[in-house]
Amino acid sequence: MDSEIIKSQAQRSLMKYLGNESKECGAVSHLGQFIPVPFELLDNREFRNGYMTKKRFRTYLWLRRNVIRGRKENDPSNLYLDYWMMGKLATSITLDKLAKDLNLSRSTVSDHVNQLEQDGVISVETIDASDTADGRHHNVLILGVCHKDGDVWFIDEVFKKPNGGK
Image (cartoon, rainbow, N blue to C red; front, side, top):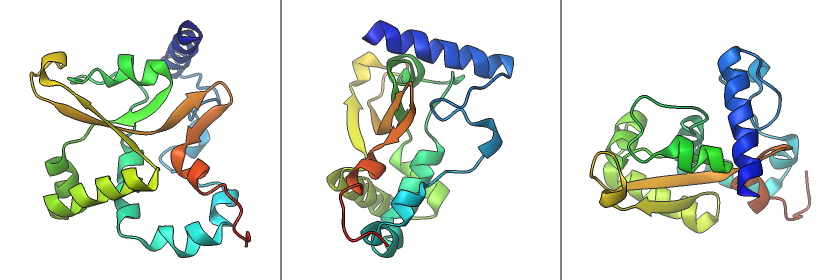
């Protein structure tokens, strides 16, 4: 199973490098910089009128914007090989950087990350300092998985349960 995922992800990376992106697994070139939100999710009252209004949703969107889908020059936690190539939609960004990017306090960003994990829309893994290239521990935030059929975001799964629709 893992070898199939690695082969599939390697093929996607090569196609992206060659400029022939497929429409599989988030490599949708016509969407460019946009973060697609499926109508099914927008039609969910709980998501639209509740979750989208939460302050932590801004933090979620910024994390999603920073998901790694290719090699990075500086990748001390090996996101590309250990996460993307294994079919995981992940990012690793320090709380200080996240706070600076969002113009929020570090404690607020830390609270948001904890709340997002409790909500089930992200999963957090800690990489020990001995396993990183820079000798520091890193938190990896996983927001979904990538299959042959495309991206599966945890947030979509959380809000799939019926709640009256529109």
